[in-house]
Image (cartoon, rainbow, N blue to C red):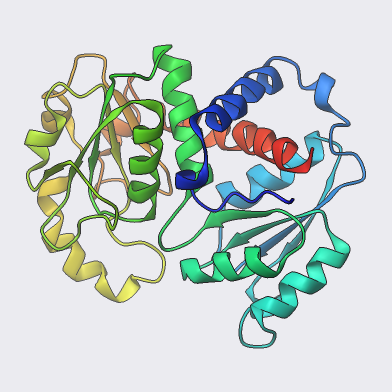
Length: 290
């Protein structure tokens, strides 16, 4: 029976730990896994543009001895030129694994339903599991443990926030969410705040994301006003623990949701997160294609 990665909610703690353990091995010895996926092909089906997701999967697949093919919006025009069902069935005859980066989460579910090869959620409006797994791995790498730590998420209750909620609950971390009223995440949040100052007190990690994601361009001006008091800056960071980690999934709008000073601070692990996307995704690919 094929395995997919649709949401962290579908993973057992044991499976998360196995991915992290394999990631450790991949980072220590790249040559050992140079032919792990030799002869395998990955299809990257993207409705949304990408920097980290595309490059990290393409380079990661190459480092494992496999091959990637990128199919952007113009190649397929998913759901318009050709149905998701037909794309899933066709690609399954050609490739060994599919990464779908899309808008509606139902597109991921439909692709996984009809594909006979593993499907990985490369981002949907509801969930971004690869990002959250890389984030939690980065925290573990830096702080050496996870259980009992507190992550304060400041900003829009978006797909990244949803995935972090599942991930933190899975590994025994606490998560505080500070967001304006009406912008709360879809998942159940126990520690919900409407003032970022309350959420970051004694936090081990502060995490933020852009105020307006792709597809929300018409809301930019409105959101800037609503979120103006949710900026991660020096004043806010000073309320957290002294060595609090600073995280952002990128791309960042410097001077909006986070200041340049904080991105470049010694506590920032933002670019370590970005690098770990590749390492964790390599572990995911190997796990799904075993």
